[in-house]
Image 1: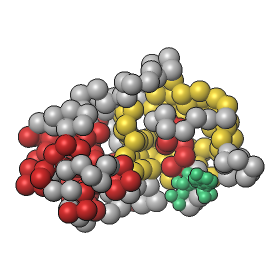
Image 2: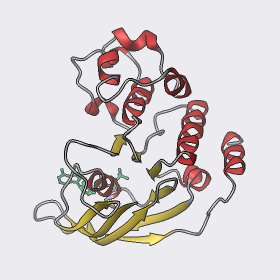
Image 3: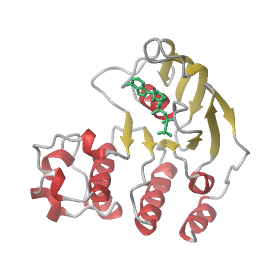
Image 4: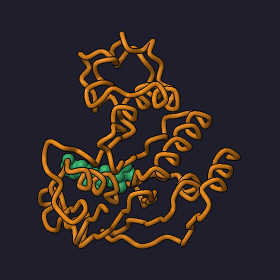
Length: 220
Ligand SMILES: Nc1ncnc2c1ncn2[C@@H]1O[C@H](COP(=O)(O)OP(=O)(O)OP(=O)(O)O)[C@@H](O)[C@H]1O
């Protein structure tokens, strides 16, 4: 279980953007997070992944603070170019955390032909898939997917979310941040909305049957 308890956050002297925000995410759950631009969704996701320290409150993984060095909570943002070393080739980038198996690479549409290239020598959508493959190592229990598929064409988007739903069935917990509420409705087991510093539940859209949701996704 990933828990954020009573998180307060603001940048410098600017007014607070997160006010006593709490959420919990179970393994095997996809929690959809939407809200207006600038509401603090990415900031909340980065706090969950340990990239940003909250001013108050705590992040707990199975009841304890996540330890440094071991990163079971991964954060993937749509601007993947900022998440990679531009001087490293794709093969080195992708094996930084683990050696992804062929099944993972195929499911995410990652070609081994890219491995000798640098990040600027593949497309933004291809780099997005590389960064996602890197994030989904065996130690990963939770994924913060921040506008993960916004740069991808609809078919690739379906393939990636279908793969993540399979991983969900194997226990991966996903915090899916997006403005695409139609997408969130299809992939999420639960949805929340962040606005004015507070988190509120969206309409209950719990999908009890995984196969049904996969079919719905493929029909988009
Ligand atoms: N490093 C920073 N320094 C100062 N202000 C920041 C910083 N990063 C983000 N902000 C501000 O914090 C607020 C929340 O940003 P955040 O990116 O978390 O919002 P968001 O809900 O993810 O927005 P969007 O949907 O547009 O991506 C915004 O007003 C943003 O300008």
